[in-house]
Length: 285
Length: 321
Image (cartoon, rainbow over all chains, first blue to last red; front, side):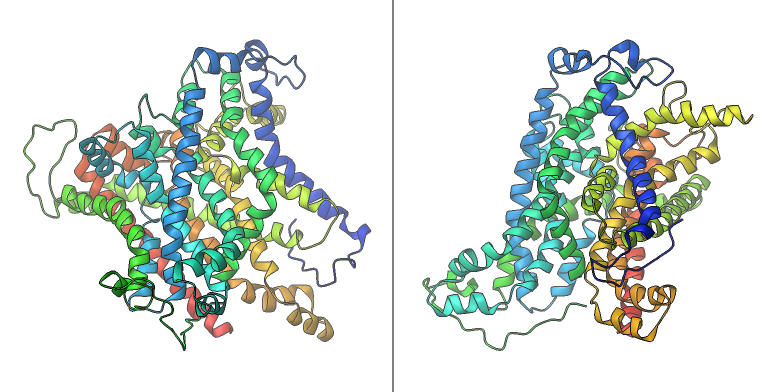
């Protein structure tokens, strides 16, 4: 079905009539990728009866029953705002801190550079579950269990390798003579960095931030074990309503709508930055 | 492939600070990078290295979390030895490798196929890309919940439609999650669904960076598209393939949400991968020492794997160049 065909012609050249099977394949893939999500979202707007019927109810009268249950009865918005705070804060810190590390790795040729670079990356390799117990014990002693500060610290550390890795590639792209000429003109290093390098880096920093924010928003394993009531974020909160024998499918659907709404919105608004940013990072390495 | 650029001139320009601090300032090219990296390294040390050392400590002692009153006895390498003799460990390792290899292999070829199709500048293709990327954007937790629902007996779309077809053909309903073999393949399927978009995105980026000239030359020579694909596209795509495959392998190796939510390692232990085995050992049986030893072994495997990957691809890429 998917034979490799490479289009050598210029964008205008492809013959439209020969492309019908391409459209067919692509539409099929789109459906496979989209319908499961769409179906769960639809379930979220069903009432209990249509959601639990054995035959899929593609047509139904919309109901906000499940949302009412989650928001009013269960107070899930608290978890929602916890998630917002944790993702924003950890993104801010990891990007701000990681940026300087990436800059150093890209700009300076010091002994041990490759080792540092590889070591930073190995931090991403540890399975989260593997470090859960030591981190749990540490958090317990430090009084960080079930606090937003604890989660922010942890996520910042978790995202740093990725940030450093992405931004190092981007910094290499920016010719260093720009900074150097600013410094010749009498700026300090930091002023040159802020006025010259940073504005040039902004698109890449945006793309990396979006990515990191999504990863923090989605994080599940640590959030489950390190929070209980106060700092619980969306993923563990949703888990509570989605597993179990007496599962209510419309509540699951509504929960999925609430946790994915910001993501979908984000991607629709920032699609271009996200894709181009990620692409450049790949090509660099 | 990073070309390390050396600065010919590193002028210590405009030093406004004097005294001790300026010794660590931008003018000191040996020390300043470490100053810049310090915050990152400190945080990674605190959250990365410290738990690692702690794991080493726990793994060499006998720590049962549910019995904190027991004295912590030094047991040396006993935990590793016990694991190596444990058939459950080898079972979990085999399942993990099988899962990773199958998933990454399928994802790679599907992702590459899709990326190649997207090379054609068709009308509406940008619009379709959003739909294709959806599974990857969803939280892994949500992807797992969605498919748990899809395959739920008596409720999901898959059980209803696919089950309806197989019933009509006389095979009965497919036990998507209750048959050991099928449950495993179902998990591979969901992982492919979730992460093929990632491969697609990475490989698309790689394709976009390939220069036009080799293709023009090939066209003049009249090379077939099959030949062009193997002799031009694939070698030039290698760096992107490397990154995509390494990242995906590392992540598939430690797949967590998907398996824990869809099968909890079952039926029996048919889908008990290393990560699930680890979770059960540490958080259900509270055998922290065994879990720590297991996690260290897992990390070693991942590091060795990515190291080998990088080596192999580096050498091949250099030959290609």
